[in-house]
Amino acid sequence: MAMTLRLSDEEQELLRRRAAEEGISMQEVARRAVREYVGIEDHRDRVFASARRVLTAHADAIERLGR
Image (cartoon, rainbow, N blue to C red):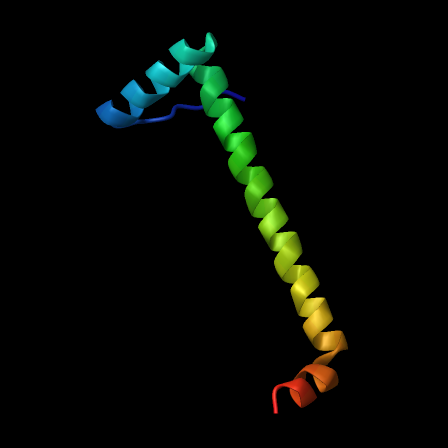
């Protein structure tokens, strides 16, 4: 899928520099950044869901420990 990404001059320069440093295209740097961001957010969502399950399953014990 093609899309247009509008960047500020500063963002574009940072992207250009990173691409040059890594010897890859600006598009590849942007694609990697998107994959990393999505992966981090997916992980965060799984951690929060797990924490909610633990809090629910052990609510009585957690309540007693809080006293």
